[in-house]
Image (tube, rainbow, N blue to C red; front, side, top):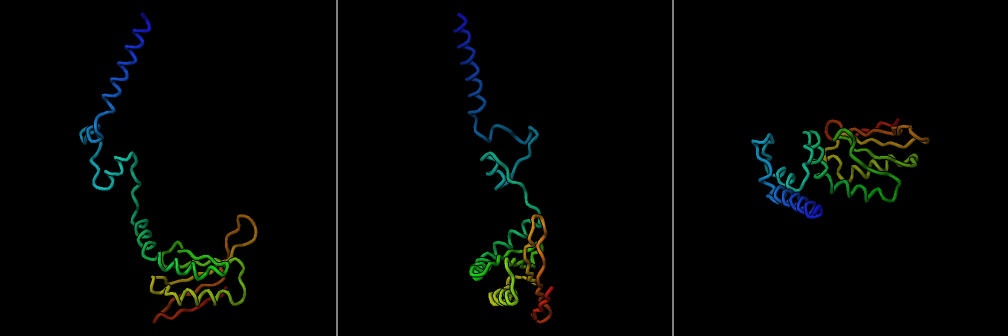
Length: 160
């Protein structure tokens, strides 16, 4: 007789669980239950089970610049492939940061010319910085040179 009672208890629990979870997602909660209504894309994301973290204005601006500069950055990375240099946007969106693994006397000038020829000024960069990693763990990279755009689109190189 106990097994019949246990079987009925399990069946009852399954029926209650099915009744709660089988309702459509839109009926599970309402704005009156303490949750705010979610507009547009966020609502679709919430239906998938996760809500994206909102971006700050700076993050949105960086994302937009990255999208707009993607073709230029791809061309620049392809042009830098034969060397051991890597290109990235600096913390400031107006800075093009080039890291050189093994700099020599002419590498900064050659890499500068590549970046300028490909149109870094047209992509909104005002400064191109050249860095090299320091040997040793945890040491910050060392600034080799800075190329700055001045009045009249004149670029000036400052070697460190």
